[in-house]
Length: 237
Image (cartoon, rainbow, N blue to C red):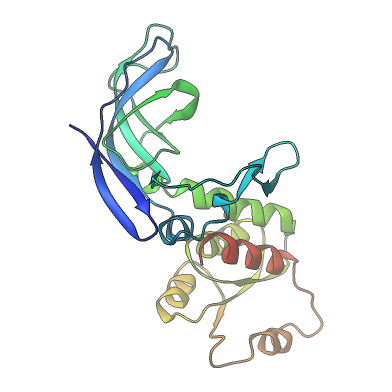
């Protein structure tokens, strides 16, 4: 039988066997190639500290609001994105056929039976490892767009996890001429420099705000600083 990764309770994980549901006419059956968690999100779920245990996202207000009834969120599947190959498509499915490689926001398990609007075609030449990075890339792009970076501006990015590192590259593509980036981990700072950051700073050994001020006397920073800081804290710490 196929297996899936389940959190039975905080800090208690198992690989649990399951029976795949019967395929309906508007559904697709997929065999998994590659699955990935999302570090910050999955860590909170694993520890039992996720805000989604007590709140739910309201699409109308676009806010997390308190649940009317708070029940135990466990057992709960883990995982963020997966890639796979279509094994079978129902008779009403129009976009996919057997053999198509696909990806989507799916938990960590060996097979899926889903509606066709839950997945997308995996672009030619894109690896599974690259595809599962699209989710953090969405958040990095949202921060860059909200910051409204203009050609020639100077940008500071605080936090160089996956989202922060992607944001540094997107800031450069958006026209930033000088990018500062702060993170306490040397390996992250080295990666940031490799990806085009002009100056990295260690918040454990220097006054980052002061150093940026010294380097930008007479200039202003784009407001991406606060946006990216928020994203880094919210999604990857």
